[in-house]
Image (tube, rainbow, N blue to C red; front, side, top):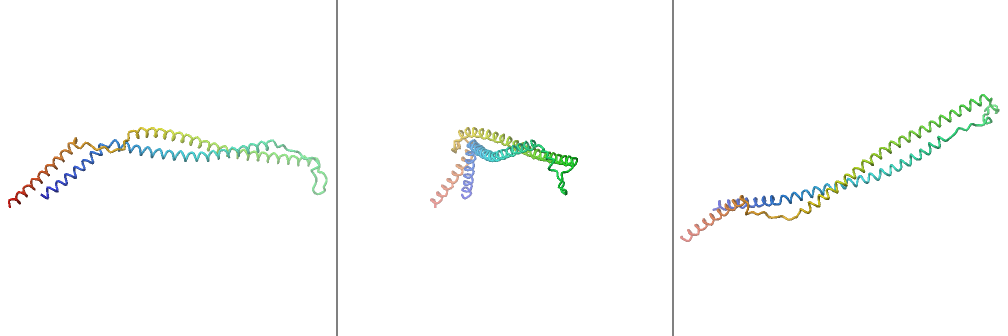
Length: 220
């Protein structure tokens, strides 16, 4: 009779396993819906984080762009001022011999004037070139940052559109999500019925064995 009880416990375990399996199958759609909801919520959070980070980076870039434009305007003004500077020829009286303190000959004065004018023009050209080169560097930096801004704006726009679509999908999924576990119809399952019949059979066998034992005891 111990073997019968052992067999009965095994069959009951199989029956419980079958119940669990049937319930999982019966609620498979709900489990899948809940899984999709979780995944979409995770994606939305990730996209919102990306939008927040890109927006912060965008703000910094816009400040940088504003500063660069200010610097470029300063350079334009400086270049314009330098370009407008004209050479002023000194009076002949300014050309004095350092030794004898007398005025220099006219030929020497003209040579000195030519040197001064050449020096002025060279320094002016050098200054304008330095301003121009610095302006080119600022222009390249500005172009690079403006490209980053455009890229970030596109990224933010795309991510917001994705979030909007995911939120629409979520509304549909949440409408389908009942959140309730629906018990399967065990009696409609052939495997469940087979195990149940076996359990009833073993229970009957145990009951018969108990009756035999009781009859024998009574006879004694």
